[in-house]
Length: 210
Image (cartoon, rainbow, N blue to C red; front, side, top):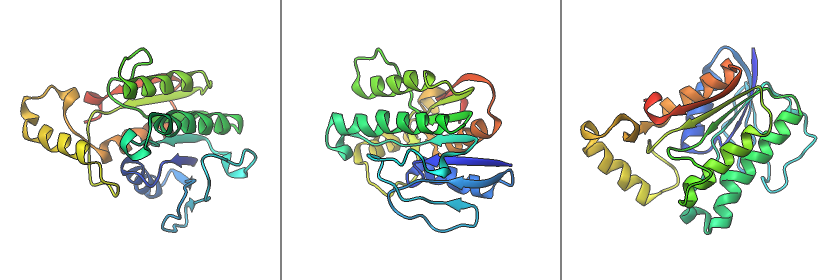
């Protein structure tokens, strides 16, 4: 039986992870720190937090595995600095605190094209996050790199939704790695990686999670 932490439970992918984890008989408890309350569930512990000031000594950090689906866009965040804080700084702080309290597996929802040396700010941020997560020292680290993510978001992202719609029209012509990936498939692979905790660093490209 596993105790699992999920960070980013209110997002598109995170909400699918939450549903799947709560339904999984091998998961005894899901710790999901959020800014706003989630729907109660017998297996859910939902501490309300400020990600700018995470409580370092809280007992709920003591889990076996962590799934991180935190992410935003520059448009939503308002600036590159704010975007970097959500997509790099917060995941890294969660990783460090969870590892310090004994977590052994970490699964991160990254992105297609993640590359710390990229000239593209978004891809470089994702790549730097992946690089820095590897330095934390988890015995098991899985980096899932989806392309466009399919699903209905609470928070509108017009440009992303247009790209998803256009991609679906030409889906049969696209190489697998550029096809729209359903959010529930990404969630499935994140949960599988966190619970399986295979030793080493594992990268799942977009074409592997369709």
